[in-house]
Structure formats: C-alpha cells, structure tokens
Image (cartoon, rainbow, N blue to C red; front, top):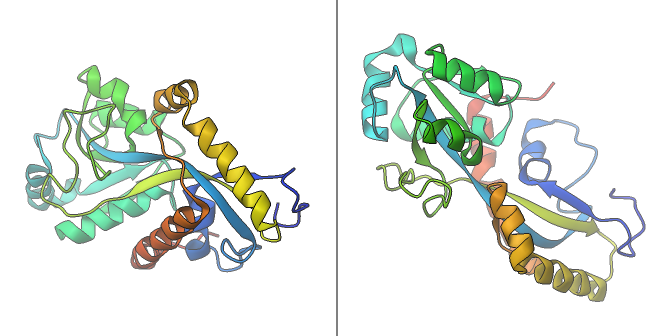
Length: 244
C-alpha cells in the first residue's frame, strides 16, 4: 500500500491496530505509519467493554476489583487475541486498579463468551458490540465500557470513568493515502469521505456494527493517531508483549 500510486486510486481503510499498536509490538515493521501514509479521515470509533459471568458476584467495577483481590486464584481475564486493543486496555485497567491479572488469549470471541457463560472464565474484555447480545439475554453482565460517553448500544452501563477508574480507550477505523499524495487531492478525498460518513444511511450501517460515525479533518485524524500512540506505547511496554 505505501508504494501504491499517489493519485487517489488506492487507499487504505484500516482499524487502529496497524497504525498505532503494531509499531510498539513488532521490532521490524515494514512500514512507518507516520512517514509512509497521509491521514485522510477517521471514519468512526468503537468502545470496549468488560463483562463477567454469572458466577462472579460483582455488579460494578469497585466490587469487581474487591472480588479479584479477595480471590487471587480467579484473577484472570480473557481477550479475543494477544496483542489486541482489548488486551492492552485490560493491562491499563489492571495498572489503574492495582490488580495482578493473568491473561488468557483466545482466538476470537465465541469460545471466550462460552467460557464466560459457563463459569470457566471470570472476566472478558472485547468490543462492546460483541457483548451486547449475551448481556441483554442475562447470560453475562457488562460492568463498564471504555468510551468518553456511555455506549449507545448499552446506555445503562457506566463508563470506566463513571465507575471510579479514570481511563478511556477507544478503537477506530480510518482512511489513509500514500505519503506522496498531493495536498489538494487529500483535501478532495477528505471532503468525499466526510460527506459519505455524514449521510443517515451510512451512519445507520456503522451504528449497527457498533461503530459511531465521526469524520475528521486530516489534521485532526493525525493528532488522534499520535495521541493514541503516546497512550498505548507505555501500556504495551508494561505488558511485556512482543509479537513473534
């Protein structure tokens, strides 16, 4: 992608991980997210949630932390994958709460949610949207979500900040062009993306996927990317995780 023609014919649509997390987890990344690409626009954001199974008595984060500290043999959490945003958000939460948690990395959500329901896993971090169905069915309990505001999918669930832990972590999707793309073309592409994201039909489709439509200027998107890299870099380092 970085070596594609800089004429707007080839663009990169990507989640947060390759542009923010990968530089901190891979020693020899074959691209530089800042040097090799130009941000066009963020498209939308999504938040994360932490859920517990019915066997865990906690009804909020404070009760969860107390229970985990009182039951160190149960102090484990699952995520959909090692090196994922949920993994590092869980590390951020554990540091904030003073917890020593063991990580159980799954390959996706289905088995982890099954284990959560079955009482084999105490808590699970993943995107909020992937927890909604089981939460609404009463099979698990989502205790908090990671955004700056409550998730539209679960408006009754408080944020981590509301729960007493001043942390926030959102994922996002965005569009990039090769670094040599002319500024006038970047501006033209940005207008097109923002117009599309702002339409009710497109917004409805994103919302159904658990993504809140945004649309930003290239400069704002660049600022978001850099700020997120500064946020997650120390967390990745503290986790000790390195991709093989």
